[in-house]
Amino acid sequence: MLFDGSQSPFFFFDIDFDGEKELIVTLWEGMCYHGHNAYTVYKMPVENGCFVLSPIQGEPFDKLNGYTRIDSV
Image 1 (tube, one colour):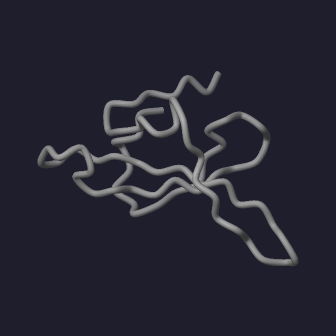
Image 2 (cartoon, rainbow, N blue to C red):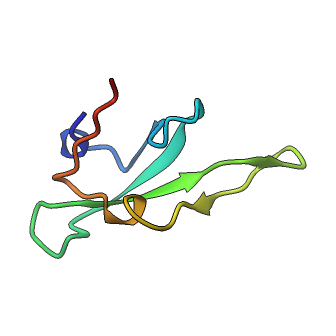
């Protein structure tokens, strides 16, 4: 999967392969280059019946951009 194939402002994908999808938010032109996006990944645990967004930090999750390829096999 190539991240830059989506023109959506956000999407869901199990990026850490734990069986639960994470929220991935597109940071339009977030790489400081025209037409190249960066992405922020959020875990969405449920606490007291509400989703709580908590960003996943550290490599490789804080380095996702339009050139990132995910081998989902």
